Amino acid sequence: MAEHFLTNQKYLPIAARYEYCKGVSVLEAHRNFCKALGDNAMSYKDFDFWWFRFSKGNFDLDTQPPQTAEFTDIPHHIIENIIRKMDYAARCLFRKTSKKYRRAVDTIPFIIKELKFESLSQSTWLRINQLIIEFNRREEINHNDPNRILLCSRHYLKLAVRELIFIFRLRNVRVKKFSIYVNDGVIHENLDILKALAFKFRVETFKIGFEWDCYGEEDDPVDVQNEVMKVLPFLKPCALKSIEFYIYNKGLKLETDRIARTLQWKYARKLNVDGNVIVNTKSLKHFEKLTFLKDNLFTF
Image (tube, rainbow, N blue to C red; front, side, top):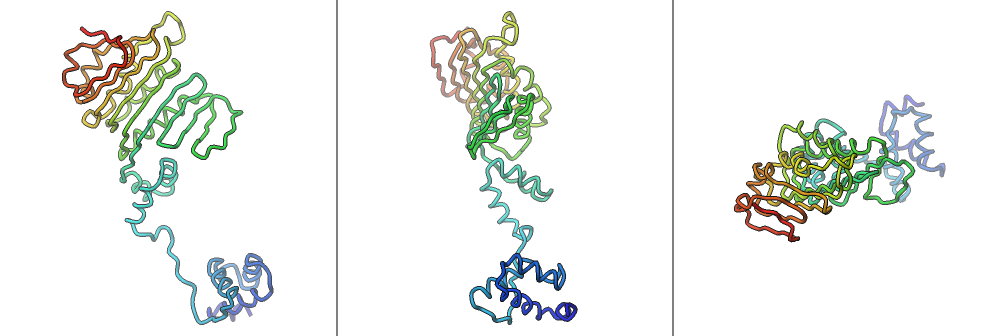
């Protein structure tokens, strides 16, 4: 009997109608159908097509299920439009599906309006537009925020920096504002791995803020300029338009002799400073706009 149905495909809808008339669910009906005629007799998608027609009172068998396109059959320009509407997390997941889609994702520009890296004593936060990725030392943390991803590890800072580097390596990324806030000395040497980048990162505004006094030992002062130089030289000079320094702790002081010699400084057009800064006035002449929020700028 099964061979009779399989040798003539037009009889398969008759068997599907028979299962429908039993009054069972579509899943059970398809299971019975496959048990009688074989797993490859009719796909669930086609069986569901007939089931839906029968449920609407249409028992006409003189038709065929429509040929639905697979995702891989979607035209390339439509795939590109879909990618453009994806957020950062969706792009990362999509580019892992195949080499074809990885190339597609990597060739379509992705604008990040705000990229914020904040280092705390027990956690590090990475904000990418509306998405927040929290890297935390503690594991007993629960949250219900759909725009927040929580990763727990005692190596939380290294994981956070790796994620930042991953973003840097996406050559099609354009960042409107890149902010780094260091509220503890934990960041220290971790950003040194930026030296491994073979190209400059496109950022329009670079903002960096400091809160702490020293690393570990109290007699080991912080070289704020050295921390800035771990990031600033790896930003694309022609793309960088604005630089902002915020030295929140009165015990910190930023010298700018090495910073002022970088192309990033020379090409920037805006400078915002809040905190103790030592700067040569000659290095400020090219800026179109200067903003100093406190009267603690030291010039020479």
